[in-house]
Amino acid sequence: MALTGVEIFKLLPKTNCKKCGFPTCLAFAMQLAARKVSLDACPDVSDAAKATLGEASAPPVRPITLGTGTKAVKLGEETVLFRHEKKFVNPCVFAIGIKDTYDDVTVDKKIDECLTSEIERVGQKLKVDAIAIINDSGDKAKFEALAKKVASKAGDVPAIICTGNTDAAAVALAQFKDKKALLYGATMANVTEMAGIAKGNGAALGVAASNLDELQDLTEKAKGAGIEDIVMDSGAKKAKDILEHNTLLRRAAIKKGNKSVGFPTINFMMRDDNLLETLMVGLGIAKYSSIVVLSSAEKWKNLVTFTLRQNIYTDPQVPMQVAQNIYEIGAPAPNSPLIVTTNFSLTYFIVAGEVENSKVPTWLAVMDCEGLSVLTAWAAGKFTAGKIAAFIKESGVEDKISNKELIIPGYVAILSGALEEKLEGWKITVGPREANAIPTYLKSKTA
Image (cartoon, rainbow, N blue to C red; front, side, top):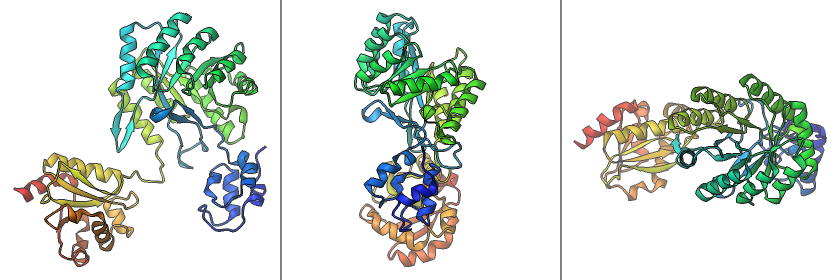
C-alpha cells in the first residue's frame, strides 16, 4: 500500500536543506506521495529509507526497456495524466508491423522503411523504433522464417513477437533471445505457457485481453507466473474505445494506485486507409499509447507523427535548447564573420538556416541563456554585455579568428557600447533585427 505524505516525511532526513528543489522535507514528502517527484531528488536519504520508500517512489506506470544497445527504447515510467502537470517521460514507441503473409518484396520494403526512417528535427533524431513481427498466417514455419529474416537484417532493432500460438512464439522469440524483445499474445488460455517462453528468452510479456476486467486478471496471472515486465492490450480497436480504455488505465494507475494496470500499453493502429491510420496514431500519441503498431512508415506519415510525438513529449516548462558552442557553418575561415545569439532551439535553427542560405561561411557563437530567445534573455538579464563578453573570452574563438569583430542581434543594439568596453580590442557590429535579413547582410559584408 502506498505511504502517506506524513509517513514518508518521517523517513526523510528532515533537514529542510532544499537540495530536492522544495522548501521543506514535508513539501517534498507530499509531492513524493503524489508521485510527482522521484526519491532520487533527495541526495541525503538513507539506504534503509530508500528500501521502505521504494513502493512510494516507484512510478505508477512501470518502466520497461525494449531492445539492447544504442537502439534500445524505454516505455512507461509515467507519473501524470496531463503534460502541464509534469512532462511525459518516455515517448511512445513506433513499431512497423510486418506480417508473415507478406511476400518477400513487401517484407524487405517494410524493414527498409524502418531502418531508413530516421530524421533530425530541432536537434533531435526521430525514427521508427521497433519491428512487430505478426503471425498472421497462424503457421509456425512461416512465422519462424519471417523472424529469422528480420533478425538477420535488423537484429539490433527492438522486436515485438506477435502470436497466440505458443509453438510459433517459441521458435520466433528464440531469434531474439536475451535482446529484451516483447512477446505479445498472452491470453487467459495460454498466459502461463507464454510467460515461461518470455522468461526463458529474457523478454517482456504482452497480454491481449478482450476487455478491461479480463485485462486485470491477465496481468495478475502474468505476475503470478513470475513476469515483471508486462505490456497491456485492453482489446480496444475502435478510436473511441482506445481513448476510453487508455484513459481509464492511466487514471487507475496514477490516481488510484492500481498496480494491476500499472504497465505500458500497446495499440495496433494498422488500417487499410493510410490517412485514417495516421489519425489513429495521433490519438495514440495524445492519449497514453506506449507502443503504436503501424502498417507502414512513408516519409510524409513519419513527418506528421514524429512531429506530434516530439511536441507532446517535450517539457512544456523547459524551452528546447541547443548546446552552448561555437558552431561552424560552411567551413568558416579565420576572417569569416562571427555572429552571437542565444541557445533557444528555434532561434538557433532559424539563424543557422539563414546563414546557410547566405552561402557565407560564418562562425555562430551560441550562448547558453537557458533556452530563452534573444529579447527574452536580454530582459531576463541572461544576455547582457558582461555575460556575452565572458562567453566569448572563455569560448576560445579568439584563437580561431583573425578579425575581432562580433556581430550582435539588432534587437540588442543597446548592448554595443557596453560590449566594446567589456571586450577590449573588439569591434562590435549591430546585425539585423530579423533573421530573414541575415543573407543580404552577410553578402554585403563580404562583397
